[in-house]
Image (cartoon, rainbow, N blue to C red; front, side, top):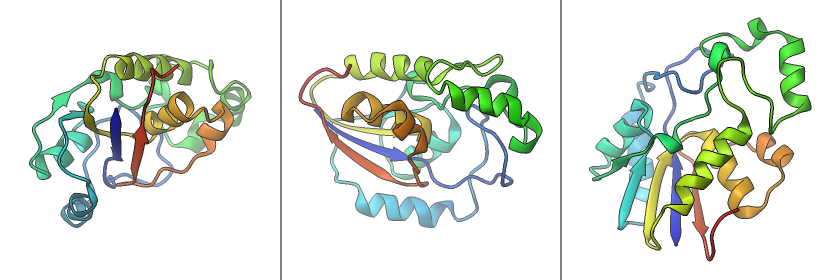
Length: 175
């Protein structure tokens, strides 16, 4: 299976805000960013899947793609941290998360392990085709861990830019 994964474009969000599942507006320069993505996509795709959050569906709509929304490729759920500034969350809570990146469950949310489980469930359900995913940084980090075998710590440290594209050739089932 050939898998092309694209992170959504930049958001209109204040710096330092914790967000995952929040359905935020796109930055004003959306069309220019989306056009750059459009020009770099290795079209055509047999199937396109998209996170149901509007920052992803708006990109798919702009690209004129027919797509299926799939909640398994939504961003991680930070629970009670959603919409708070990182400096309001507290050092103790953030340290607890960093001490256990895989199983730490955000209060009222999910863990990175939960995210990996749902992304893996999604991957194992895909047909052997040329597929495009429009999704989020957390999902892309999970893909690096699941498909490329990157450690949890290394995956968590990965920087995933807005509009970044990842191409994967999956020969066998992910873990």
